[in-house]
Image (cartoon, rainbow, N blue to C red):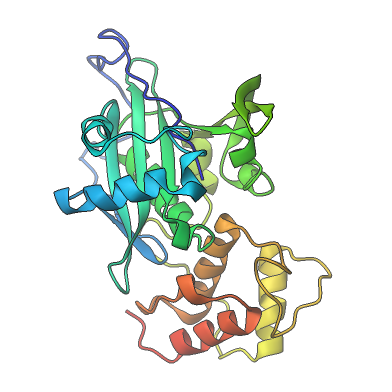
Length: 307
């Protein structure tokens, strides 16, 4: 989970867009405007959509859920529903419901907030339903949001601010997404001790050159796996692509408990399976627990028409 610990609202000067901002070369060599495409709201297994009034109760319940309440914006306090509804858009640049493509089930929220157009940065945050906390769905949605923000606004950096006990959940894979820029030492209190607050940044240039899970532009690189893989071959492809080292891979290997998968690693697995099988529209990320489940997901996807 990435925090939304407070609402950042810049003053009038800080939030005022400058007269001219040049982000990218918008013309071809002949000086003609190049063709542009709309930003995608689709990830590997989820899509983003605007919040509807019918979503407010869902968002309220996942915000105050015991699994999320101490990690999220309210830090354990429980606002009443009216207070929650009034504050949900305060300081927000854009936010979306994250829902599974296959079922349209809501799995969380992603938001960009505290935008500073003068200096070119904004914060992002994600909140997952407890039922989908380890499925990778919220991370999938967060990656789509990063691309959306960079495509729509002239931001140089996108910040993620996380309390240390939240950051520890994805510390192992954080460098593939963002660069740690600083810490506020012993800044927040929880469960008998003080914890750091960690600020990391995603840089526009690095993201565009080497962004993780390179599926966001709606295209898919040609797979280097042409034939249907056997289970052993599948395991070796997964081992090499996800750098699993010498760990023993068996059908019964549990992704979270045995292989130490977290949300980002689950999204990486989903992207790999799509690369192996092609984009089919088949989505199963929320139900897999073991390596055998992952292989069956691949086999099912590989047998379906590519879209």
